Length: 164
Image (tube, rainbow, N blue to C red; front, side, top):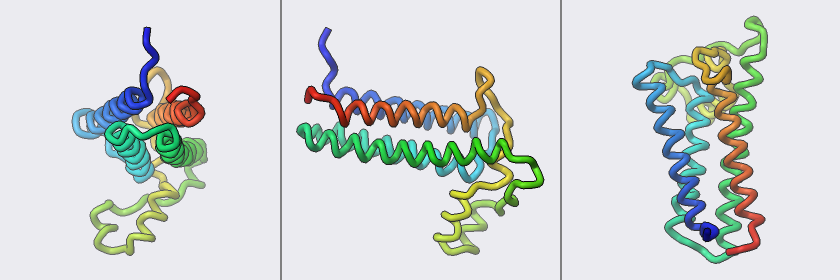
């Protein structure tokens, strides 16, 4: 059995990200779950990871380039870990300590400067603490954390891989 090339591994990671985004869209549009601000940020982190994997797959760089792409992917995964961790932390807070809910995203785009919208979305709200769906007793934030940890480990594997 032949060891897969780095290009094939980046392609596999890209397909995994497409799967994660497809599940998120399914849960939103078919099941009816409304994503909170931190869910949107986590989707953006998956999308960043996917774009990096797409670029690495198309570019097929030499060893140094592969490591650069792997490090960039690790940064995207780390960002996802931070946001999923924030959401898990919010879910553990008592109700009286949760930050207030945000207005709808469309309204915020019209009423607030972009820096304030980003800040509010990264901090999360009481909406982010709701647990309204589980799979194998894990909620979506915990499943996201597992996915981002897998992305980070994958990226570190590619960055430290000896064979080109």
